[in-house]
Image (cartoon, rainbow, N blue to C red):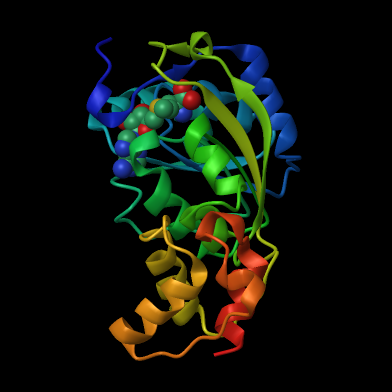
Length: 244
Ligand SMILES: C[S@@+](CC[C@H](N)C(=O)[O-])C[C@H]1O[C@@H](n2cnc3c(N)ncnc32)[C@H](O)[C@@H]1O
């Protein structure tokens, strides 16, 4: 079968990795897993042994194969498959999100997930994206801390996929409990985005530029004024915006 690179079609073929992903998700029979990008269905099959699954898959050829492979589960109402773009279709009801996603849509898909009600997510990302999501020295990591806790559970080698991608991957566990609370999310995200677009500048200067651009006065103490955005972390950013 010809796989489409443009759709990020790198199938997870290492059974031990698949089984660990299912273990990390701590599934019970009542769970309904949302899996984005079911592909040929290797992860889907392991998930279906534990609970119900709703899949969203963009490629009509994969959808056809999946409907054949899992016709029994579809008949029993244990598997439902939506053909479409996960960024465009409304997410159906689910309790947990478990997926080896197309890496190209990592950022918008993650924010779509974070704005949904769910209990736990176990997601395969490109390693570099996973490190940014779990870190605090970048825009993605700082903003995500106001939605969730995220941690890398393991690094996965390219040889676990067919065809092997050029990059390493990482399995991330996401719990929807904010590490940092912000009241004015819009202002917080605007300021964090602005700060990381000027990452060479120090916070004192960034706050001045922000006032000039948006007319919003934010205060930083002497100590923070000397720091660069990547040295702050989500909590300090939130303190600056709260002190508005
Ligand atoms: C990395 S593969 C994972 C396949 C399978 N889950 C596995 O682990 O072997 C990503 C899958 O996402 C599908 N896909 C790509 N873009 C998508 C999108 N925007 N919405 C839904 N599925 C998409 C691809 O067709 C592909 O089957």
